[in-house]
Length: 485
Ligand SMILES: Cc1cc2nc3c(=O)[nH]c(=O)nc-3n(C[C@H](O)[C@H](O)[C@H](O)COP(=O)(O)OP(=O)(O)OC[C@H]3O[C@@H](n4cnc5c(N)ncnc54)[C@H](O)[C@@H]3O)c2cc1C
Image 1 (cartoon, rainbow, N blue to C red):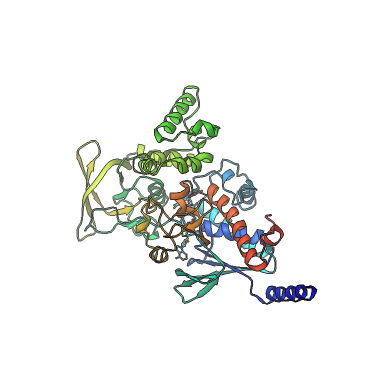
Image 2 (cartoon, rainbow, N blue to C red):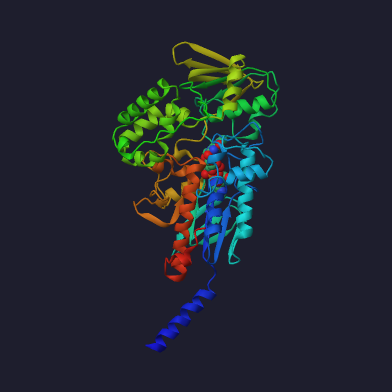
C-alpha cells in the first residue's frame, strides 16, 4: 500500500512537471478579450499559457476604442469605467496620472484615451504575472474551432493550430449590413475610417441610423470642419438622450420588479419617472435603477415578451439607456439649432446613385409625405448588426454549423448559461467554451458596456482557472486555482 502510494505520488508529480502548462485561448482582443486576459493574468497562481488571438496590433481597443477622433468620448462617466469591479476608482486614478490631472468622477474621457488605458493595464498585468504564467498575442483571425478529445483546437488564418484547455469567444460588435433597399449601392460603413475621409466640407451627407453611431459620425464631421448639410434618417428619428449630472438612481427592490409583463414593469418605471420630474428631479433615475435587475428581469420574461421588447420597445429603451455625455449632447443640439443637422423619422424607399457618385435617396416620412435627399455621401450608421445569423464571422458560422454553438432564440448573439458557458446544438453546455460581451446580449441583455463586461471578465477568469486547475491537479482547490487578487 505504502509503495503504491509513493509510486502513484511520483507518477503524478512527473505528470505535473513534464506537462506543458494548460493553455487558455481568448479569441478577440477588444475590450472584452483584454479584460478576460487581465483578470486571468492577475488571478493565476499556477502555470498557465494565455493566448489572445486578435488581428489588430493594439490590444484592448476593438471597435469602440480605436477611434482617432478626440471628440468621440465615452458614453459612461469615468467613475464607472474601471476595468476592475473591485477597484472602481482605478480608471479615474489612471486618468489623473496620464494627462488628465483634474479628471473627476463625472469626466467623460476620450475613447482613444480609454483604449490607451486598457492597453496599459494589460501590459502591466503581463509584466506583473507570475513567471510561470505566459502571455502571447497571435496576430490573426481564428477561423475554426473544433473539439479534439480532451482539448479544443483553434486554427487561425495564418496557419496556427493551437491546442487549448478552454477557449473564450470575445468577438464583440460587428457592423450592420446594408440598410438600404436591395440593389442600391452599399453605403460607407460609419465604422470604417474611410466614411468621413476625402469629403469636401460643403457636401451633403446622409446618415442612415440615428443612434450612438450617428452621433459619432456627426462629431467626426464637426471635428473635420464639415460645413455642409447633414441629414439623419431612422425609422423613429430618435436620438440618444443626454446624461444629467447628479441624477439619483432609483433603488428598486427586487419585489418592486417581480412582475412578469413588460407593460407592468414599464408602467412602474414611467410612474416613478413622472414622480421624480414633478419633484424637480429628472427621469433618469428609474431607468438607471433597473440596471442591477436587468438580468433577472430578462430571464423572467417569456420569449414572447422578450421578442415584443426587441421589436417595439428597443428604440425607446436604447435612447434612454445609452446616453451621451453632456458636451456631446450640446454639440449635437448646436448643429441642429444652426440647421446644419436635420433628423427625420422615416423609411428609405429608394436610392439611386449617379455617375458622379451623388445619391438620390427617397424617404417615406413617418408622419406622411416624402423627402428626397441628394447626398454626396451616404453613411451606414445603424450600429452593430442586430441579427446574429448575419454576422460576417466565419468562425461563428463554423461553430454553429458544427453544433458547438447555437444562436439564442432571438438571434441577438449566441446561447449560453448566465456565466457565459456556451450551449451547443444539443442543448448541452460546452464546458470548455465560453463567450463574453456583446455576443451574450440574447442571454443577459445588458452585456455590451464596460460595467457588465468587467464583472463577466473577473468571474470568467476564476471559472477558467478552476477548470485548468482541475485538469492539472484534479482539484478545484482555490489555492491551486488563483488568488483572486
Ligand atoms: C462605437 C462604440 C462606442 C462605445 N462606447 C462605449 C462607452 O463609452 N462605454 C462603454 O461602456 N461601452 C461602450 N461601447 C460598448 C462596447 O461594446 C464595449 O465597451 C466594448 O468595447 C466591447 O468590446 P468587445 O471586445 O466585446 O468588442 P469589440 O470592440 O468589437 O472587439 C472585438 C474584437 O474581436 C476581434 N475579432 C473578431 N472576430 C475575430 C476572430 N475570428 N479572430 C480573432 N479576433 C476576432 C475584432 O478584431 C475586435 O478587435 C461602445 C461600443 C461602440 C461600438
